[in-house]
Length: 412
Image (cartoon, rainbow, N blue to C red):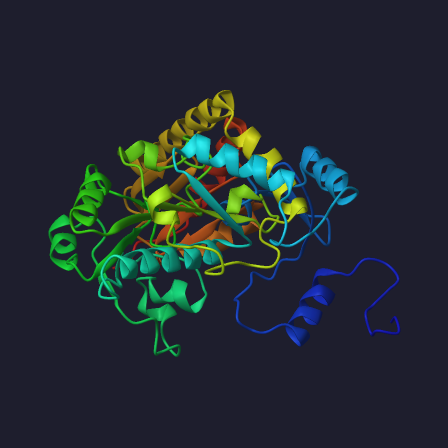
C-alpha cells in the first residue's frame, strides 16, 4: 500500500477501484460494477483487460469514440498556448466557435458554459428575463413536458417532468407546469399570457427515446409565439450530428428562439452552449449571467475542432445512413421477437427499442456478452453509440441483442 493507502505500485484492479469509490464518493449514482480504464474508437477495456463495444458513448457524448487522436492533439496544443482567462477578456477560440455555431444554426448569439444543465439554466434565466421585461414581471411561467429531462440542478429538475427526480427537493422553482409530450390541445390550454417559454426536447431521451410527433414542434412554436412566449429546444443530447442532421430541429421544420447544446460539443470535455435569437438574447445584458470557466480557451479550442468535424456534410450523411441501417436492424429484430419487443424508434444514431419485458436485465445480459447499452423509462433500450460506429459493429450488437432477448420472457 502507498502512503495514501492506495494499493500499488501497479494499476488498480476493478475491485480496488470500486472499493475506493464506494469508500469516498457520494452514493448519489447507481453505478454498474465495471471499472473502465482505456478506450479507443468504439472499444473500451476494464481494469482486467476485458473488451467491450460501447453503444452509449458516455450517454451520447463521445461523438468520435474514445480517445480520438485529434482531440488529444488539440488539447495539448491549446494547453501549451492559453488555458484560461475568464470572461473578463475576449479570446480567439471562443470567438470562432460562437461564429461557427450561430452561422450554422441560424441563431444570433451564443453563451458558453460547462454542462447541459448549466446551458438550460441560462436558457431559463433568459426566457424569464425576456418575459419579465415585456410584461412588467407578469410573464414568468414555464411550460414543459411530462417525461422530459433537462438536468440535475434545481432549475433543471424543476422543469423536468419526472416526479421521481423531484422527490425530496421541494420547494422547486415555482411557475412550472407540465403537459403530455405531443399533445397540442393540452399545450394550447397551458400557454397563456403568463407564460414566458415552452421548453421541450425534440426527442425525449431519458423519457424513452420518444421523437416529437409530426407537426408538433412547429405548432408548439406557433402557440408560444402567438402569446408572446419563446420556444426553447433542449438539444443537449440531440444536437451536433446525433440524429443525422446538424441539429434535430431540422427534422421537424422549426427553428427555436433558444437552443441548448452539450454532450457532443466537448465529446467528454465539459463544454455546453446556449444559443438564441438576437431578440431573446438581449434579455441577458452585462452582469445578468456568467460562469467563471465558461468560454475558456482550452474548452473552446477542443469544442471548435470537434464541432468543425461534426458539421461536415459528408460526416452527417454517413451518420444518417448508419442510423437508417441500425434502425432497420432493430426493426427486423422487433419483427422476429414479437413476444419481447414492441417497437424500434428514434432518429439517426439516437435509437430506442421498446420492450415488452424490463430492459435492465437485458442490459446486464448484453454486458456479459461484451456490449454496453443503457435502459431508460423502464422498458426501453437506448442506443446512442459514437457517431463513427460501423455497420459491422451494429451487426455484432444486434446478434448479441437477439440472443439476450431470446432468453427473456414477457410479463404474464
